[in-house]
Length: 189
Ligand SMILES: [Zn+2]
Image (tube, rainbow, N blue to C red; front, side):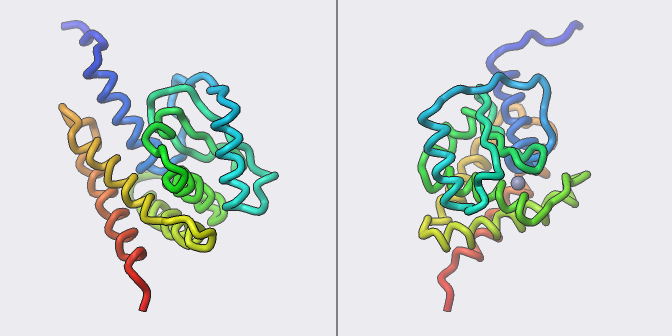
């Protein structure tokens, strides 16, 4: 048998595998083929304003948008935050986008090195989420939006048929992140 033809299902599986790589799997390694740059000035301007609200040193950072349905969010070169159209479609509200940006800023500001495996990655993801929650609270942005986003991404992954490679451990990582976020979001005494 030759390779299976590419169809909607394999595209969906590929998108979900990339979702693992990008959002929950550590926002780090680039994944070939590199999507084209997405030139959307209004979206970029709005994100830039949000980034500067979250980080007074935003002038040292660069935002780059990629034109792909795949939900990518990652740090490159220690100063570039890369987001994909697919990510922005999933994180559509200002608060959700602020969470994604704040999570990436967390990786930057906590000086996270790229993790080598899932065991190394989980504490980094938890730390970036926790950093994001505190930063969003300080700006009066509802961090619960991040929990809602993670729940939807996990549900999307759970519905994937057939389950992509790494499905079980990715769902477990989502569960740990959601539980930690929910604890952090509980009202303080
Ligand atoms: Zn991350």
